Length: 278
Ligand SMILES: COc1cc(/C=C/C(=O)SCCNC(=O)CCNC(=O)[C@H](O)C(C)(C)COP(=O)(O)OP(=O)(O)OC[C@H]2O[C@@H](n3cnc4c(N)ncnc43)[C@H](O)[C@@H]2OP(=O)(O)O)ccc1O
Ligand SMILES: O=C(O)CCC(=O)C(=O)O
Ligand SMILES: [Fe+2]
Image (cartoon, rainbow, N blue to C red):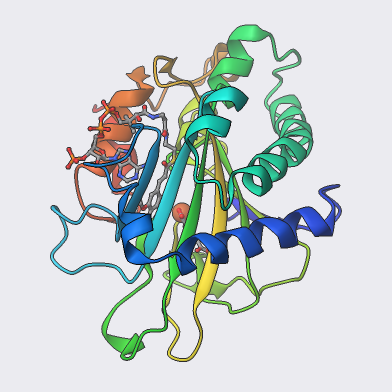
């Protein structure tokens, strides 16, 4: 109901999860001058980006987070350009998690009466992938800031691996926030905005945020499963077949993502971009 769930029997071996977490720490332990090489202005590729906060130019206060964001184009591109301290472990984790994502999407689509995931639907649902390595350093004044502000992901689905520190909250009903406790070996699955749009609101993207911690560094590793940037997304015709009115219009996915990055995190307001105004 709240657009998220936590799964343990996902089939990704525990050593794969441990390896990707360890390699995330390895990346963030690199000297600052090594990490700087992947800043937007210096990075060898637009698909590899090291940064801080969310949209620093648009935010009034920065979020307490650094990240490495890796857009997957191909194994060859990743092998050549992703940081060598983590690329093998990250790629292994992405490959192994693909099976569970596909199974989840099959089930979610059957429930929408989408019986066949043909090539076009496959692109719309899972045509592109991005993985972020998030690092939340110890915060001396946790009550003054957040790790990540309230937002929903712009993905179809997000598979999130977190360490054992805790701090992720999802929004339930009536402004009630639920802590998502770290469970060893589990993955948190978030419904994202793209799935909310394509399901015409039957699946709702989950609003979530991250609190900072005063005594421990925290890492998390979301894999964002998305449409392709060039895909036009809108409610599936199977969902509208019974005469249901479309709540969302057609939007170019890359326009939607650019809109998301243009401003600071602001709860679920991003999705208004795709709403049909009456
Ligand atoms: C950082 O904290 C975050 C991040 C997130 C992220 C969630 C997701 O990424 S979900 C999946 C997103 N979907 C895709 O990645 C689809 C494929 N990508 C694209 O379509 C394009 O790469 C693009 C995202 C639309 C960017 O297109 P392009 O025309 O090349 O324009 P740019 O100049 O590169 O970017 C525009 C603007 O957005 C900022 N930005 C782009 N990518 C990222 C990124 N990965 N992380 C942070 N910011 C990004 C970029 O800086 C530009 O802003 P300027 O001010 O510099 O103009 C969830 C939660 C978080 O806390
Ligand atoms: O750190 C977390 O648990 C959540 C991260 C997140 O929401 C994101 O990167 O979009
Ligand atoms: Fe998120």
